[in-house]
Image (cartoon, one colour):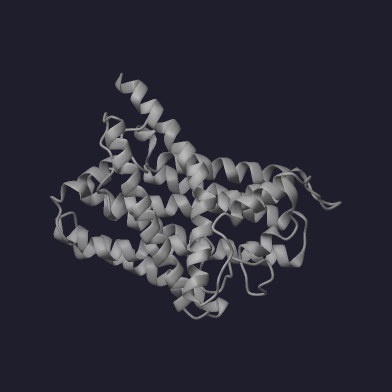
Length: 319
């Protein structure tokens, strides 16, 4: 019975992530518009855009290789599998034993690599520039993420996301400076992973200083729908990951029933709403920075995570 419950919660979680991803993206855009004094598009607009794009056949350049055809599917599959590992309304899902933060970082890196290869495949200068910037920023973002994971591993004694969330939920660790430093580093990495660094404009394809969107200018139809859907899934994944680690309260424990699932779902929706509002406020309040300042932005995250790990090594006697 417990195995059946784990499989059922896993399926419900996947359906929830697939349904919520475009809605969370639309809500974030709507909140950002309202904070900036504009009416904004409907929160359902991403769903309409996806429906329109999925009905269209992709158009490929003459010199495009199989990379341009396979990259959207590889990136979407990696994002979907990563989203399946991050708990939402319940713990103890069927994939919980595989919900390792190192594996999660690897899947995100695979999606990033597929995006960069797609940007370089056709050979346009703009796509190559976006891919080069993306990978150079990843050189700072990925070590910062792994050092943040090191902080959680030292505190919880494991890299499994369910076990880390359970350890933090129990409150036995208390308030720690190193955990706060890792939280700030992880928030900066989340902003970078979702293309919301203050040099990007995630709501348009026409920004000359953009990074992520530059690699999608040759995509169209179903391929562009997969890229957009994958980006929405990645945003939902990161918001759920932050909520699962730093606000692990309200989620249904493993082996619970439908009543606990309903409570967990309400708690998850509340967390997502607060995080979407915080993200919209950040994007509307922060001025744009020059692109050469991005390594400083991500380098600060790397140093914060490293400082947190060093403090933990000293305080726990591991040095």
